[in-house]
Length: 395
Image (cartoon, rainbow, N blue to C red; front, side):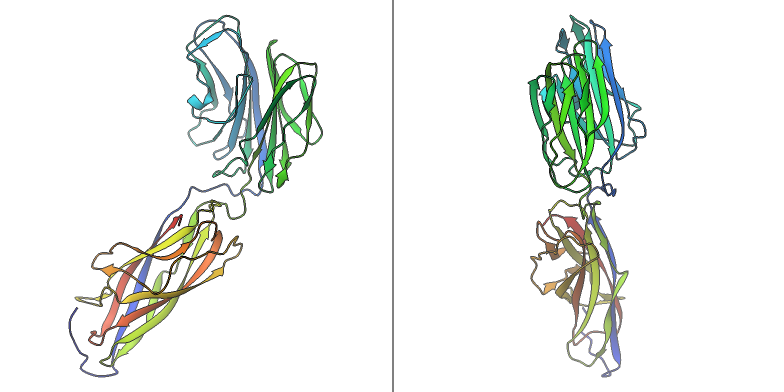
């Protein structure tokens, strides 16, 4: 930078203004409903040709919209021989619970490009008895997109008319318990008080399926039962759909001032410091527990062809405070002061705040103390720089 000494004391000033940009690596947005709600069900049997290639499909549940959670359970009679059989995880679904042909459950979220009907099973050939299949698909709004289920669920099997449904646990208020009963013939099924039945369908004499739901709070799901119209073998499943937890509406969301101004300095031939504060708010709504970090880089403070040293600015400290609805205070791993890197082009950013894993959920206000070092030979004028903050999930 130029080696110029002010010609007059106490009359020359440096006004430093930092224009702020902020970018972020935010998580995918969640669904901001307060609780999981049952939307509708699509349930149907199928008696398909005993020979050749085939498939089994179910219509999208009525009213299901983008972002809704779909869960489907299939019961396929183990009769005849299937070749090239592909279950739903071969058609864009994720396996949830169950590995037997009697009860396999899968899930997916509705997207804008979804069809009106979902192909769930395909096979290249089948021989022997008629292919009997039943499916129960249910749609729910308000599910937590990051972690849709509290656990992998629970499954039990047995025989007889009375069924003690398996229990599992719920992590958040406003969650939804779902129980499934898959049976080996055309018996009907009814659920005990507390559960609302969604489906009860049978296919021929070999397979049937029933499903029901119940809103639940935190803790172990209530004990419930089901009763068949006759005695026989069955498989029962229970899983819990997570509601959006506190501080879980989606993303790491920053807000910041449009500019940061350092007070003017009257040049007197000595090195001086101009100090200011600025508050940024980081709102971690991922509910991931991963923590987050904030990095900063800058162009050098410049006034035409003159510029201040690249190490002229520093973060001297920070005071975090809770924003409305914060879930946990951040545990910061950064020590101060931190020199803000600068250059003709912004160099590699440096870390100025780090919320450790398990901390910093929800909105936190960060009041940063900043210092600008003005050398004795600084030239008068107004200096500006562009600061780029980047906030990302994870420590």
